[in-house]
Length: 349
Image 1: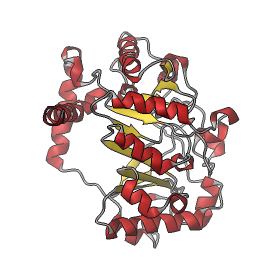
Image 2: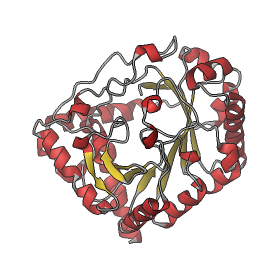
Image 3: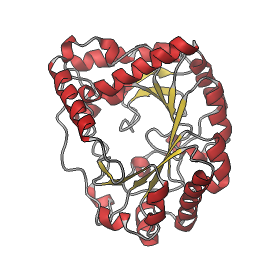
């Protein structure tokens, strides 16, 4: 969703270098070696341990999901994924694609530990934070994901209730403050970011009393400026006053959206592209099922979608999406990650 960072100020020189590199990449895109922006190694896997959620945010398409979609991933499917990860040398895992609250998944911390044991180097989580107390704050900080993104309307109970449509404000507030303070006491073992999703102006959200301490303890604070329509699923009438649908749609080019460069696995084992807006499991972005297709083979199939896009055959769901990310703008960062990974592999494998 469109957002503004309230804590991270990028160095102007670095920003200008990235901008210049992006402009150059757009000009010479057709001549760039494909390994710079796509490769056969599994760099990032998006894993939905569950698509169930305990809140019902007005800006989230979860409210329109079918009941059969709101399930936990069976152990058999998770074991198959672990087996696939073990065959790769480098992997990042994001535990929050599409919809659902990951902490509802049975034995969440145990699953995180097993992902690490399988060879995963970085685990990221986005959560509504209402269940930290049940999982255990110290367990989250000792053995949980490396990067924790908290999606939260803001420190106002009435606003929380009208946006999340759930009675968990006081517990969620306590959880957020507790995990930030405990993380500080433990030497900040985790990166914890706060994503404000309220219907107040940013300057009001950031100046609520609790935010004084949060600004000292969180790694980054972002404030949602507009609500994405998720391909037309979210309309103005379902939103609270103060929330508005994204007004500007990015221009889609023949450079395939960078969000398609990784695999997403749902609880039913189906493998899709786009962990971000492919809520409806579009057939054009369906790769296979983990019970029949291994991760390496599935990842190779990404090239088919990218090639079709570059040839002008853009999936219908992508044509309507307002979250298109031009890969030329991410080439510099991706090149740095590939170089770092190659050095890592050289040293450790």
